[in-house]
Image 1 (cartoon, helix red, strand yellow):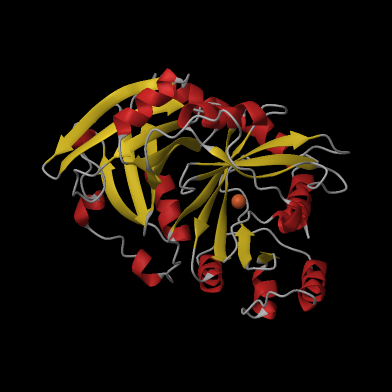
Image 2 (cartoon, rainbow, N blue to C red):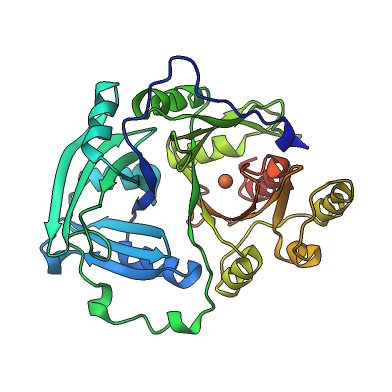
Length: 389
Ligand SMILES: [Fe+2]
């Protein structure tokens, strides 16, 4: 079983200490061609609801922002309003619709930012404050891998729905379609994975270690993680309290093209590959996401025959009905103490880049290493259909 071999590494010698506390993921910002329609897709398919809007009507003359929320998960979709916006235009032509910013909720934005920049972080924007009638929020932004950024959000003095400057979406009118659809029960972001070009994984991880005081939580190499055709290496970086989990992948040589390399080719470099969203009830979540039209990767029947055999000799008992798990194409990974249930969508846009994972954990903090082979084979099947294997 691969998970048992996966190494958990503590902070390496000489690691910098953290400059502040991380409360979790605050929100993710996507730069897309049409923010209004992208927000609607995540509402109808994934069960989000509109939480706020900024645009021409709010005095924001350059960029439209549509924020959607589901429990503790907030996605913001942004598009440029005017012709000739090369900052957005260049990003869109290179990456397509993509995650631009992963924002962390922190206790002390200025301290974390200043320590990060002093340790070599690439500053995008020095600390600034935004206010409205509900209070004030402190922000600061640094760059990370590729064109992805991290904003530190200190919102302890803010009582509003989301962030200053946002007004209720749709003029406060609910989207009538959403009340007809079954709830998806997605609760918070579990982890966010970044793919790197070959041989850039270690430097991307060292950046988190050096600038933010993160440490290695878990790692896996290509001797463990390969199929007949392709391979990857992965390191999971985390903050001192292990609240934020940022796995970082790179391709490894195989007989055919790694799915990580396919991502890098279509994304135009390093970027966010998948966002894992946590549920307490993966069977209901996935059943209802399927009912809403979300497309997931298919897993071959042999995986479930193998799983049943392997579980017979395991101390862990999976309480969910394995026939339902098989019918829904959910993957199971376990060790002697617990298990996780996970499933991966097909790419959520035309480029084979970003996808979404749905995950339920039962006393198991791994990342599904025991499923990487089955997952890779399912992705390779799709890759082959795209002519990219
Ligand atoms: Fe994942």
